[in-house]
Length: 113
Image (cartoon, rainbow, N blue to C red; front, side, top):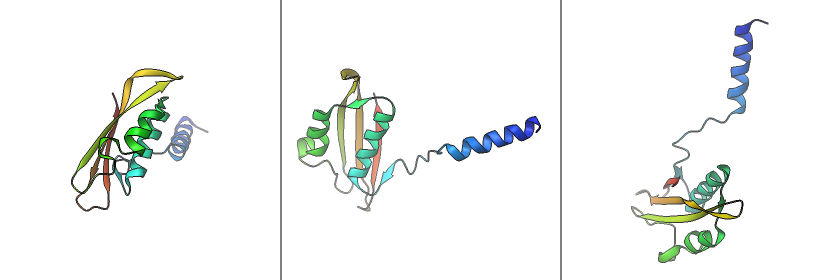
């Protein structure tokens, strides 16, 4: 087997195993709960734990408006505390959810700051 064949086989293997991230599919969701679950999973993949008290009060119970799911054309925001090895971190998970005018999808913007 020559070097070119080995490289070709290696590239095929890498691309078959690795999921290529499509930003469009990671931005728009059919439900608000699906969007915030995705944001939580992304933070956990980066090695953080979610502060459950913050999550329950701001996401599950809806925060100050008693509903986290935004109406058409509106945006709701939440900042969730993060933990690492059980210790509070200075960083937090920011979640912004926009209700698209169609009323059928939600646009998620999330990052750790």
